[in-house]
Picture (cartoon, protein in one colour):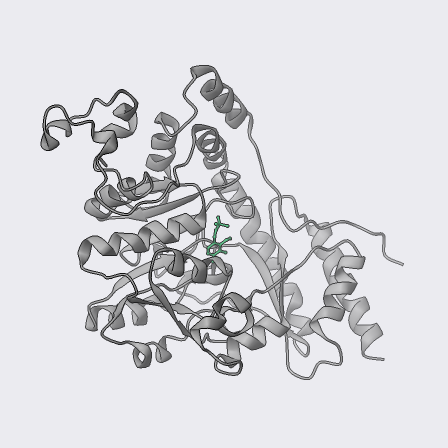
Length: 404
Ligand SMILES: Cc1ncc(COP(=O)(O)O)c(C=O)c1O
């Protein structure tokens, strides 16, 4: 009999500093986007190794505003963006909400990421960008993706929602393409509770994103974040002396600003980022190692020499012909206090919302396989070696029972 433990899927660390900053923001009377958001953007950009970061209200909005930048550079509504068939559904939703058509490509079952050898065959005259997702923090095949993008004059927007701390050939993911979009939702390493952020080295893209997150407002300079409430702006006279720049709208925008309270939580989180990252990486790498002995039944992702996986969660995929189903395994883990999540669905064929695009089940066999056979478990900072021992023991017990 094994003593029962609980392994929740996620956690959040709200630091003392975060609490202090939240109170400061409340006391200041300025809780909508202001100086804490700017400071959070500055520190996040530094950490990501990018020149600029633009904070928004979710990771989905981060994907959306990054894509919507392309309208300033000749893209038309209805143009196409290439995305992997397997991701959290937000990736596909974001393409549609940005006004583009998602064109799906199957994934590589071993990396869980877009199969770069299948990208070129779906490029058309309407393709504007490739949006690889670094699923489970495992970097996508960025050299190949960037080479295809260069050859066909496409933009690359990385969905790095799950890839905080991931590195590819010594560079942080999120800075490998034109823009990188992160989620700051609770499940992620740096969290603002709800939130998202886009990093870029292109100052013009950053300007446009500041406009997009704020209804497409004309004034998008960093200074105006401070001064728009008073209508005072260094760029004001560009539009004429008596023009209130708060009501000049240059593009179709969104309402997706981050607020000061969220930024305060995020700043607190940045203060302990290195510790959280190290603990989560240790947990993930230990789980990968400890599960090697279950190789007849399961596989997971591997860390290659030229990369560092951003420790988002521990994915487990059933191998073919196991004497049990994913749902039986999940049920057993959950019954024993171990929370799990499915490893998403193939968006075009397993998520009904995308049916109108006309794809048929079977077209994305690898993504669909993961949809039926994958799950993931938390690797967060509150998980200890004792929890990992427990996970391994419960898995052993399940395999013994179901192989009888
Ligand atoms: C790959 C991916 N893209 C986008 C998102 C959307 O992020 P959010 O939930 O913050 O909107 C998520 C969410 O975790 C995600 O996993």
